[in-house]
Image (cartoon, rainbow, N blue to C red):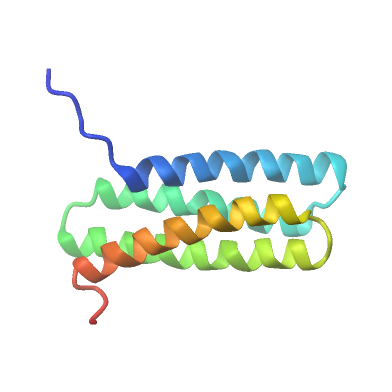
Length: 121
């Protein structure tokens, strides 16, 4: 049986989703913050879910549409991270780590969108 080649964005978005889940658990248990963390949980885990759907897409248009949604979810995730940091729910180190992961994922998704023709240079 042939081994599947690792998909970089698939792995990075899954790892990021795990980080988001663990962070949201900590926010609810330690900081008793439920509203913003739920928003972060939804958008942060949706990035990878949409990448998975894109990979399983049945057409190039389907693939591009799901990658586009993943990119928009990444932008929303950045918003919630920045808001949690600005309101002192996140310390600087946690914010910087999570934000750096977001930036890397966002750049990859944008590059995929450009190469798929969804975004015109």
